[in-house]
Length: 417
Image (cartoon, one colour):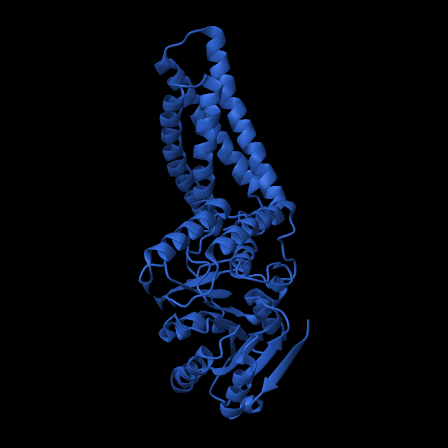
């Protein structure tokens, strides 16, 4: 693969603007967009010149276009100041972003789709938390509270299903992985890029999953978004590729390959007020007990209800296993979100330890049912439920202790938060 960079008046970039405190590169990946590109770049250029308070450059990245896109981009770079052109010999939005972000000297790098489906009023809220260091990556979200979108029911359904699948399988906290409106701090994004394998549409999702897995802070901005009816994305093939990507990232987490060792680490949280009396350890312990207890109660109730339902068709041990599998999925997801954080631990170790804890919990509750059947070969259904309830309560307490002191325990003896 080869790349070339055409600079128009961009040689003047960042000069004569002493009041601007950050540099931002905004990348526009394009493939066969000779008609849409001029209007997009001019609208964006006008907006940035009039309303954007940081020093900026627009970088148009041509992904091996077969029409006149590259020539059009070069004409725009010659006409407009702070517009650059980069050419790649191979297609792929992820490839374009990886190569361009790596080469950038700006403090913040971002990108947006050429159709400008996302309202530009969200650009400053996207970049500002990165400039002041509050967040590491910022994303536009069409599904966050306050977002306003105009799109067909088919695309809406696919988007919600896909993002729901990401949250279910990876415990992701972000709401919209695929909105073409993102930015990141360069010092953070560069180490991550070496671990992102996808060159196409899954690039965004993989980047965000790796960011969260490594403890980075992802900021979401609700956006106004209007669907481009001329979109050329093959939904079926893209969906299949995304599912394969989710499996691949899960394996990387499990093996520890998803850990990025040279990322800048955020300092431990501490109270701004010097007279704060509640220590971090005390606050963490109190919250974890309360959160785990509430989740545990809800999970236990759900487990008993499912066990009673499955017991209508299956033997006791099979019904117990099926009920535990279902409730454990939601229990683990809830505890990942609200109780514990494993961001600073090797992924493979955490997942292996979690499986061990689940196995011990299942063995304990199953042993209780087997013990009851040995004492009473044909126990009443209510007695089974009582025994399972007691075993679940004891098992849940043991599970909390193991999660807190073993699975989510840091090397320095402090709980992660």
